[in-house]
Image 1 (cartoon, rainbow, N blue to C red):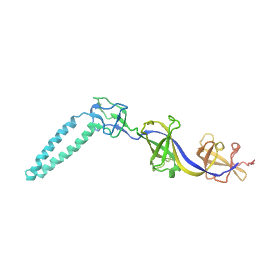
Image 2: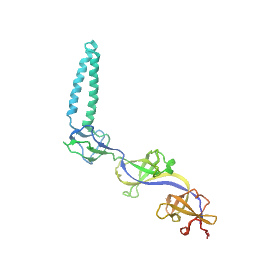
Image 3: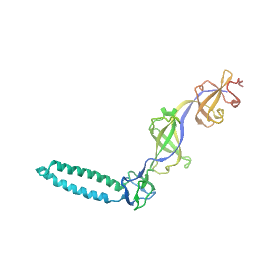
Image 4: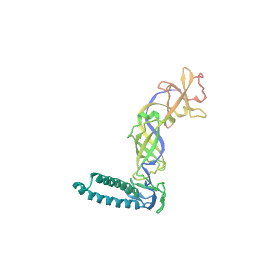
Length: 299
């Protein structure tokens, strides 16, 4: 047996996840019609504001001519209104028509000449020039200079995890290297089934060595605290389940105690249970032959 003592440990949380592009947008105009020209191909890099797609221009050009005519009409009506030759109602009706057409022209322009909302890479292309647009995204634009990931953190760490906390990312593709990351959002709810809460992690990726879809491990430091650490081999596992248990000496009898496993330290592991605390006589040799309540002899 051994007498349990609290040890100061560096609390570190390792969680696996998949990387995602920070922003992804399906480029799909709100107008149906013929696609005149697609300016990009898969893999092309674009800047914010670059032209991606030009749709059929007939409706836009017609509305532009109509707006110009209404603008001239307003210019003729203004001096007539001042002299009382035309009524205020006639002028107001023309002005309303002008404002409505001007707003509609802005909508048509944005959906006829479709531009990149942010800098990124073209990840997919669904149509070719001259095809009829039918609702599916014409191209998919994804951001790769900045990535994100969602990690599921056990609920008992909720008080320790804060927005802005720094962590590191590790990928088996780059052995021995780490990449910096930051927790951007701590979700405000806990999943009742998994007893975890999600955090959104942001990863700068200026050199683009990390790619969306990569499997990575995140390492989050949560500071120092006291814990009970025992040899890993002394913790038993119930066959057919994930239940873990240990034995302690209670007045000369073996007492079985269910535990949760915490952080692993080489050959040792943290164990957590109400009965496990400093001063308890813990059985770490011969425990595999014990059953709950059997009388024991400590040698």
